Image 1 (cartoon, helix red, strand yellow):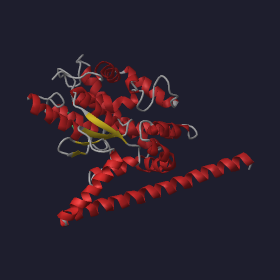
Image 2 (cartoon, helix red, strand yellow):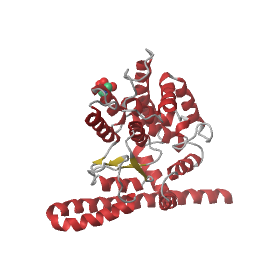
Image 3 (tube, rainbow, N blue to C red):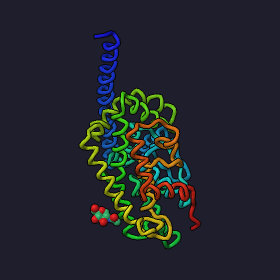
Image 4 (cartoon, rainbow, N blue to C red):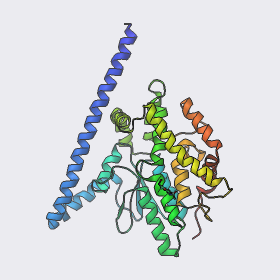
Length: 337
Ligand SMILES: *[C@@H]1O[C@H](CO)[C@@H](O)[C@H](O)[C@H]1NC(C)=O
């Protein structure tokens, strides 16, 4: 074996070992964190008086994690997440102010588990103002906005019908369209030649998060790669095919609905939560320029060739053109309500 071969073999071995170590470390930390949350929840029901003391310490910890109290809703996001973009878009459109706090991957587990008292590990999460309710999913956030609209104006454009809400829920529920889209994107990067794709993903995840997180993230990254690989099976061809099929099912349905020339997916007068959710959750496969700051820029970033081809193909379909149009014409609009 040549010297260079030995070195690259050693490097890849170190990388694997480091990945497993980081993986184990992340899971132990998560378990300890979950245990802490359970103990905290129990203590506050058993000893309501001492719980005041505990909750003030927790509030302090919370302000460390998410940056102190504010006078608006707080939206906790991973900047590039399509689910987070759905909520941002709907709230921007409603002109409903919120304060966005971004966390990086891995860190989001801890923030999310903490805020939802152990019931959820994903973002987005919204903490409402002034009543500090924790909304644990993008659907819950849209529902909250819909209720606000109804309360204030006696009508709601987010979910103007039961169909609109169901359509959005079908896209954003666990293991549905939105996640299938992300699993396809991960597949392209995890199967790109060498480790370039994974390095590119790390760069994306470092965008827009706090300094200390972006400094720590590269050390935890190999563990996160392993989590994605094991839990989403992103380098497996059969799983990839199933994911594409799941995406195409929704895609075909939207193509078909739009084929009668309607402006919005469910034929509503203005954009609804269904349109926003479809456009936002589809953005990783369309890469509209308005989202250049999210995952990747279609025009500026080097992309794995198979990924670029997929985006090019989807951009040409009716559903793809719809996503491009909605981002271009409506992403910046605030409804006069
Ligand atoms: C949501 O999904 C269910 C199950 O696939 C389907 O029957 C229903 O028609 C969908 N709803 C909408 C509004 O698309």
